[in-house]
Length: 387
Ligand code: PLP
Image (cartoon, rainbow, N blue to C red; front, side, top):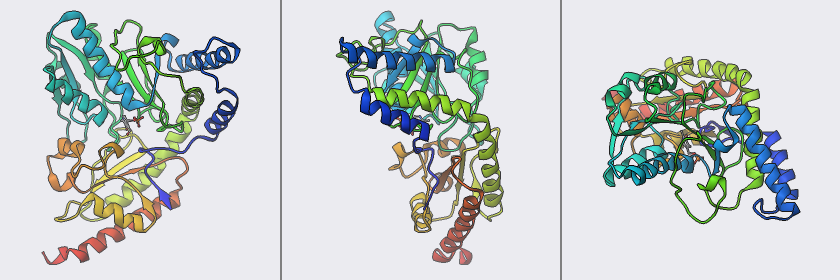
């Protein structure tokens, strides 16, 4: 089998696996308990927080461990907006792009239902947000701008540095970045970012853990109540092995980033040129450096062809891919591709390929050949040649 769905989840890095195994065996006490084993567990968690803070160049108190990026994104957006509304009693305005992950986008939709004003920014044909559109959307009541680093369907890299520049002169407007798909692939500078989301299982870490960096001046209303853990904004018993695993995953992702990115770029080039040579296939991703090297998205926009059809046909050849993010895999059409192309045939037949350092160049050759055969079969099946 050829797994090419590394955007949906990655295997544990061997170093992460070993760390988690050791801590799951020996470090089982509750880190909030006030006995010796509790103190020791607490110490491991706080050492992890300090190590991550050093690696990300932020303060330890600015790191909030969560159950994953979905929670981090909810906490960043709802937490900031609810705290602001509580303090000011005014109607908030938020800005986000139309291509955000559903854990950001649906927060925006919920807030609209609750009376907030939200500007959803369009993207160009390459799937990127124009920083001047952020500037143009700003209002007197704008509280938060949320734009992801790398889009999880197309790999398109967003101009987060330029957006941060636009917002630099406006200290009252906070900038949140969902860094899930960019981290470990593309360098990121957290200095001009107020809130930053990471997920463990996308970078060789465990599932069910992530973090939110929230700079110390930020007021967050908790999403849940019932404990004083995580600076009082995220209650619940700390998952010590997962925190240690996440820490190891972040460290290895940064140590190995350059080498992996160079290799992934080779895979991307090979896949890109192979796919570009297949007639009538539309490649929806830009090429690196405008795309992260681990993602390529394409469509076969012919009548009757759906993503599900192609996923199943590639599945019969042992190839596992996705169309959209796993969280939106029930939707018939990709919201991201609709925002980019306004083309239903492209948006309902898209396939996302996502790579990892375990993938070989020969795998990409097999992949391209399989896609070519699949397209050939679809043509015969639907008698496209006769239409
Ligand atoms: N944000 C992006 C860009 C993602 O790709 C994902 C995963 O699909 C998430 C957020 C959600 O991550 P998690 O599975 O940690 O909740």
